Image (tube, rainbow, N blue to C red; front, side):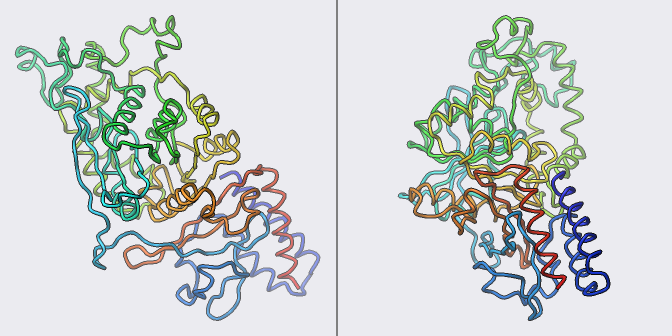
Length: 496
């Protein structure tokens, strides 16, 4: 956001400076150019914003070119920080039932990891026996259903799994971990009574829905269900778990993709890292819940499980409010109605931090040479782009794609773009570099970065999303310097 405002200010200064030199000569052309380009930073455009978009030269959609061809006339396109005109790339859309293309078939399955701890997962593409395996990890409050668009699309080329973390989605327990007595049941409401008793069932004695539990769950799932190293993709909380898991088990990971990964998780200290500090907190997410926590949970749960609250959260995390989230909304609401959901939520919130911080996990992955790719929605109100840039500064060689407009869940909001980038990144690794990374047709882009407009068709309409690739030599100062140079040259050219 700050960079966009700064670029807008630079445009205004340059337009005024060159305009004063020109006087009245050629002013109309310059004024038209400035008017078009100053509005550029007010937000990302859809393809329909271009007049006559249906007449754009088809060659321009797949190759580099020097300007937009609109209504048969060559126009000035947007300019990247390096001074190159931003090219448009046509990418595939999602499977479309209206065209008899329903995509890969999705299977819903259950796996009993431990007694009474059953994990739900979905899979597709099992027939692609020689293709790479890809595992998706969900964010907090959702489940494998949030990756339906990846399972259907990527399942045509890869073997794909998406898992529900224990305590979330359809991996909530089938039995009460801490049942209430008959007297308690008669005197209290039963809407969310599971886990609210005074005594824990033997199978749940050490149960706490923590990040350490989830990384163990992922390890055993890969070993026992998938059976070989995987490409692992995680959004939000799932991104943290993916990185944490890769740091602890690099031998099981072919690569990690972070989708707006949360850079921290857990409020209470980890007993292994800070034993004296951890002793200050008498309870850390185990069952049964203390009486005071039960009361607090009842109050909070009534607020956050309200359909209106769920709707407001979805409005926050999706930048494009035209995105259809009906299925996501209904599945989240369905999960909140499970009798164990409230107590599981309390366990998650009071679970201790992991044994590794996000930064430490990142360093371990770097030492183990685990390939990492970053794909972040630029308009995320929670995990701001600065968090992705911090990862990029630590891993300068890691591909970093910033997508706009897109919020906290780019895989669901712009799945066409995320799937396209994932295919390209996995293809690059599988081919040991003989297949270039997505958007890097020019070798210099690897160092200096590039910006492209990715266009696709969704439900019969064309859409456009801007993707910026950060090169290994990126810095804010270099972006500003190259931007000023490119804009100054463009303004001078158009003023002649």
